[in-house]
Image 1 (spheres, rainbow, N blue to C red):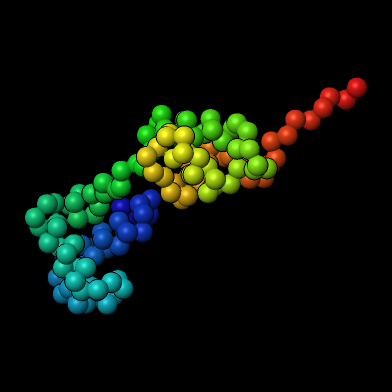
Image 2 (cartoon, rainbow, N blue to C red; image 1 turned 180 degrees about the vertical axis):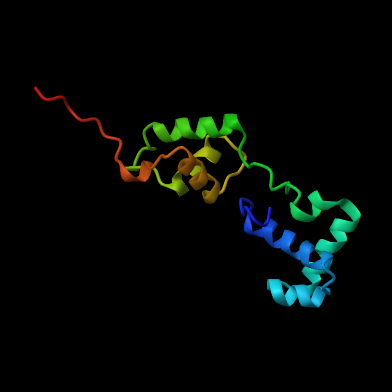
Length: 138
């Protein structure tokens, strides 16, 4: 693993720490050579002893936060954005989308950042275009 270098830098650093500990170096010596705190070296060594090599090298997946919008809510908001903006508005803004989604009871509450991320993932930029109908040529 240390020779090939196909792993992430964190995994390679942990492997290097374990190898140096196995050679008999103290946690302080390893920490100064690798460039981490000695507390980190001791934590990796403890994980290796208690849970094995796999746990010492790789992190457990983190649960993360729950999604604010489910698939149905996201689709309804995207459909809202694809339609014309409310009367008196030339184009959609992120703030206006959030207000309209709550007003039309598509969601109980939603923040501007959630809307911004939703639009970014669908590559939508409704604030750049006016929703106007152009007449045909001829």
